[in-house]
Each structure stands twice: as C-alpha cells, then as structure tokens.
Image 1 (tube, one colour):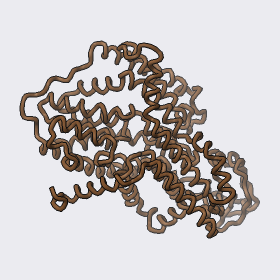
Image 2: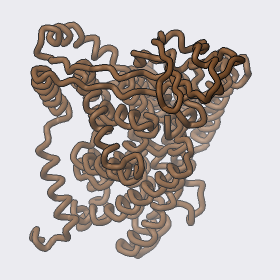
Image 3: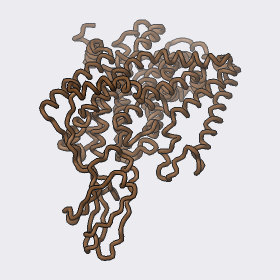
Image 4: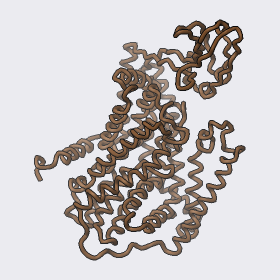
Length: 586
C-alpha cells in the first residue's frame, strides 16, 4: 500500500518508527545530556545567573499557613512540634515571624534543629490583638555552578565512582530481581498464572487474562512472555481466534505495565529515582502508588474487555472450525508445589507481620501517625526478596525444579546477566543525575518552571496540565521505551517543580507512570513487539504485518489512555491518597 493511501494514524506510527530508529542508545543519549549540562552550566555561570528559592511555609494549620492566636497579658507560651521539618536538610534561612494585619511585628532566626520543640513567647504577643505565627524558610540565592570550573572538574573526578556506586535505584532493583528470579526460575510465577487462567469460566477469561498480564510484571517480563501464548491457546481451545488472545495478553502486560496488586520491580525503580530527585525529603516508599495501581488492575481489565468484545473481535472473527486442543492443566506435582510454595509465602509473610502489627513491633514506627513510615515499609524490598525466594524454593523442592542449593545461585546469576545492559546504563544515568543537581540546574528549572505554571493558571486549573504532562510522557514513550531512562530525565525536573506547587512526589510519580505505560503496546520500538509479530505469524502470516497489528492495538491504547486519565481525574477530585502515606498534596 502506498504511503499516501495509508490511514493517517498508520503514517504517524511509521514516522514514529523511523524517528525512533534514529535515536541513539539510551546510554549515548545520557552522555549527550551530560555534555549539554556541562555547556549550559558554564554559560549560565558566566552570565551570573542566580535563582532564588521560594519562601516556604513550615507551619500550617487547617490547610492555611501559620497559626492564629489571641494575644494579651495572660498569653501562655506555645510549644510548636515541627518534627518532620526539623529532619529536613533542605530548610535553611529559617525565621519565626509574628504578623498582625498581614504585617510582621516580630521576628527572629530559628535553627532547624529547634523546630522539633520550638518555644514561642514573643513580647508582642502579650499585647491584646489577633496575631498569626509563621515559621518560614526565606528565599536563598542559588548560583549556577559550572562543571568547566576548577570546582566542577574536581567534583567530576572525585565523584564519578561514588555517583555510580551510591546510585540507590541500582541496589534496590538488583536485590528485588534476585528474589523474583528464584520464584520465576523455579516456575512458581508461571504456575500461578496458569492456575488462575485455567480456573475461571469462559465469560470471565478476557478480564482475568488482562489482570494476570498486568500483574505479570512482578516477575520481570513474565507477563509479556508467558500470558500472550497462554491466552492464544485458551482462545483456540474455546474456538475463538488465537490472535485475539495474543492481543489481550500483550496489551495487558504492556499497557498495564505499572498496574499491579503487589509491589513490583517497577515500583522499586520508580520510587528510588523519585527519592533521588527529592533527596529523600520527603521520602516515598515502594507502596507510594499502591492504592491507585490496585484499582487500575480491575479498571483496565474492564476497559480492555470492552475493547476486545466491541472493537477487536468483530474485526478478527473466530478461527472458524473445531476448537483446538485443551490447554494442559497443572500436573499433580505442580499443584502440590503450588500449595507448598504459596503456603511458604503466607507463613513467611505472617512472621514478618509480627514485626509490624503489634504496637511494640520491632519494625513499627512508635509514633501513631507515622505507621506508613515504619521501617517495615521503608525496608520492603528485602522483605519482598524473602517472600519470593522462600516461595520459589518451596515450589522448586516439591516439583524438582530446584535440586540443589546452587540452582538458586544459577537463577539469580541468570537474572543478573539480563541486567547487564541496565547496569551499564546506570553509569551514564547516575552521572547525569548528580551533575544536574551539582550545577543547581535542577532547582533553576524547577523554580522557574513552577513560576511559569503559576503564571498560566496551573493552581486554578491543574487538571489540563496533568493531562498535558501524561500525554507528553506517552508521546515520549513511543520513541524511548526505557521507563527508568525517561524517569531519570523527567524526575529531577518535574518532581521538584510539582513540589513547589504543593503536590506530593508520589502523585507526580503516578502521573508519569500512567503516561509511560499506555503507549507501550503501540510502540514499534517496544522490545517485545517483534515477539508479538512472530506469534501472530505462527497463526496467520498475512496478518503479521506492522501496520495490520498496530491497527488492532490502537483502539486499546486510545481507550485505555482516555479511561485511565479520567480515572486519575476522578481520584484527584475526590482527594484520595494514591498509596499508604502518599497524599496528593503535601
């Protein structure tokens, strides 16, 4: 078909494929960003560019800045407990202010350490009247540092190894995947998927396959590798077109990549990059988006089912002929292994919960309002490691997939081999992230960007900007598939910017993850797209063409993107937390 006769969206996707193929590898892309940071920092430093931090209100009551008090001869001294602010290394130039009719009538500097128990007994408060007490971090001038200066060169040479070795996402992701690799290598994750898929009635098979595929990302790429061919076999068994099953499994695993019922490696990676952007102030946990992602699994499954039955199946039709062979169920040995594996997971989880649920639990925060900031949640990655490792070991010993202790080392070693390219990429990502922060370009862009957004009405009409941000990420995802690489670019800019506007880092992370997931399924550059073409070719070579397959996938991406954004908007309007200890607003 001549290009001029192709539908507009197919010509657009062809352009995406051509442009994406000309993009450098993410490693070289980050090297280019480092060069750009060097040149930009030198130019701005030479021009004497300085950015001023915005005034930060440390004390808020009832959603309003400051605390209103009545002054008079009998005024009793107050003690303000601002413990979270006292722990913040970013709060400097602090002042206690007493205002009357909007005017400062008394002030004095405050040490950050004093915020935990700040005594307020200003003489002016003994004069009758209504006052408002404020604790503010006043603006501070931040000059742009040049990486071409003597200071910059010293920093670059002395910090390169440290930047790489201390890059928090690297250790978290590797530890998480080593645990998952034991459950995956032993066969536990695949067995769970097969057992669930084969146990549901035919009328529920599509939403269940969608949900399974989305949750499959907990086992690295298990969802996109295991579910599509399994779904194809189930559809063929029912006398339906197996290509429909392939599409259902593929879309569920790719478009729903960040939706899950349990914390996954993607949560660990996103969390660590977000915390790197905030300097752990505030620090979010691996559960930062959990509430939203749990609901997303069911919501996306419903939307995907509607698209499948209303738009995709009518175009594909059934196979026309006898149903295929019945998909093999779990063997008696596998069923027994599954029971032992899941039982071991439940038992291990029960032991861990004993350190959290009792009031005197070892891993529980002693302060009642800080439950979700307990060491249990901050250290969730090691806990998840033990759950996957114990479950995989129990399953493997029963089924025979784990015959000796060294098999566990093989599983973990194989997983680390697959992570080799990521480790190399981290060398470039870590240098860019730290260089961006050293030069203060991150704060310059965040502060100036926040000022621009305020100027164009972001605070009054935030929803259009949320939609624009999600859409921008979704478009970028068509050209650059690596979620970690994109977030490593976006996080240092947008997380501080949205924080300046009063939005919690967990919410900004959620906006990014929604946009990052949806267009995976329609990107010709997605690593597993060729695999989908190969599976479809095994069924019908005539339909295994890029344009044809994309025509089947575009309805999914379009409906899921609009639906997920609408769900996010409703969530925002209701003011619901996106995860434990993760409100929308700071």
